[in-house]
Length: 161
Ligand code: PNS
Image (cartoon, rainbow, N blue to C red):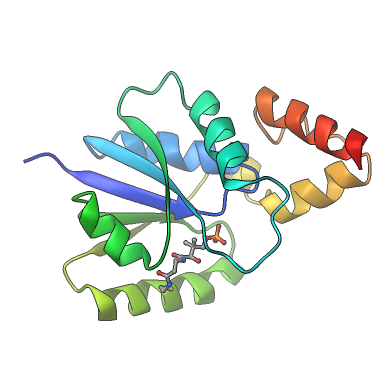
């Protein structure tokens, strides 16, 4: 039986930390879907379509990785694509509480779905989309923290601002 995992997130924008996690995850599943949440209350820097494009470009070399977007409950989406696993990353201790709450809520909603946590390489343990947006917005370099297409998109976005 084919094993599908979903790696959900805002990916606003995708960073090397996300890609490191996806690269680790894809070796354990037949199919890994990076799924961008659509209906978030927060004002994103990039539209869902832009985030999906940036993710698709950044993962183009990985055969068993797909990029998609979803609305509503993650567990409903995961079940609709036949996934048995939700993949998430834990970088630092402060991620743990939020991730545990989400994992337990998702288990409450769909006990047959398993949340699997992976640890990204320590080189990216301090990298988050929020800090990347902030640093890029203030003119700092994020070139080694995000893929080249994202670095370019950030420069374009903040040049327009
Ligand atoms: O990149 P993020 O902000 O850490 O991703 C959070 C995400 C998208 C995984 C989470 O907000 C989510 O799954 N939202 C979908 C709504 C949902 O299913 N909520 C109930 C379970 S917590």
